Image 1 (cartoon, rainbow, N blue to C red):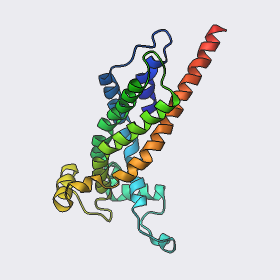
Image 2 (image 1 turned 90 degrees about the vertical axis):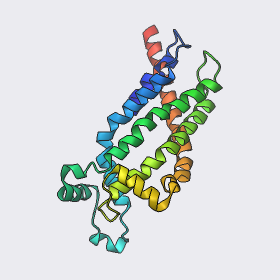
Image 3 (image 1 turned 120 degrees about the vertical axis):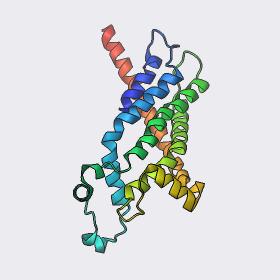
Image 4 (image 1 turned 180 degrees about the vertical axis):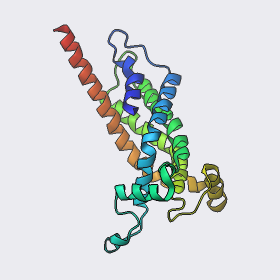
Length: 221
């Protein structure tokens, strides 16, 4: 869904007939938010299982006594204890993280490309790498607070503190640990986000250009 949204948003950049036509920043943000919303229902259970498995504190020798023995066993345990609803624990926090942040994800990329590229030309490889890296860092800077809340809600009642909901988790965390608790892991996320997203956007742009050139050549033949 993210790839389709990015394709929709940037396709105007690859049209040879009108290379100066670009999507508005508002359209870019809305389409990004939509792609974030569409993926939540799919990613919520998967992300929950990932967090539960990562949070297990058992050594190799104690693995037989672990609560979760693997992804499928984790799903089965959650379903047995909390039903289908339990598989979507923390979904609202995930929605509050992904919907606005997916919209924001494309804005820094588009703005940086436009600023560093001459009008009517395609962004160079170096520009794409810089723009993609900046997009990843900016997005994670905004996503980290809700990512912390999401992780705490997903662990609620499974070895972690029990929270009544998203708002209770936010207020309790703020009162007990202060504002900086919502930025735990930001530095690590940023260090990871820059190279990962730089390569992601570069790969996307190179593939789009290659396929566009291929389709143009076939049409001429």
